[in-house]
Every structure is written in structure tokens, then in C-alpha cells.
Length: 72
Image 1: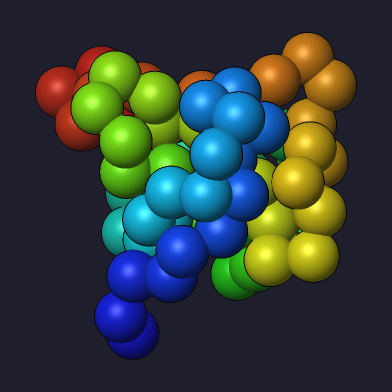
Image 2: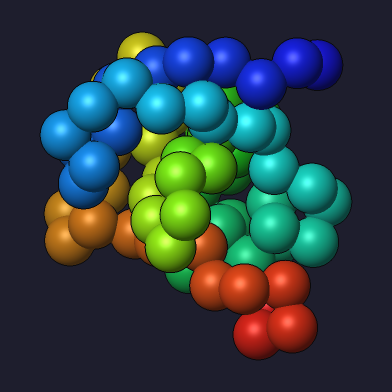
């Protein structure tokens, strides 16, 4: 699936977001204890990596940022 432009709460602007990889989905499931993370997207803005769902701008409290791939 292509990247989507969505509002990023931490950037305060519309930014490109992408779906998560399998390893990233596993990390988010472990961190949030959600049954499904298919609707989670990551902001692609430099140094952001904020997570949101397709329907909620700020679904995680506190804000949840995906670690870099080497830290997963």
C-alpha cells in the first residue's frame, strides 16, 4: 500500500505516514497489548516516527513513537 498523507499530532501538520512492517507490528502489540494493530501508521517526517491509527490522530496516551529498526 502507498504512503498516505495524514495529520501528525506531534508535527502539527499533514505528513506522509506508512503502514508498519511485521516486526514493527509485533513491537506495537507488545507495547500496547492491542489485539490488532493493522490500523496503525507511522509518521515518516524526519525524526518523528509518531504512531497513529487511521481514524484517531492521538490514540496513544502518552504519545507512542516507533523505535528505530535496530532497536526493535
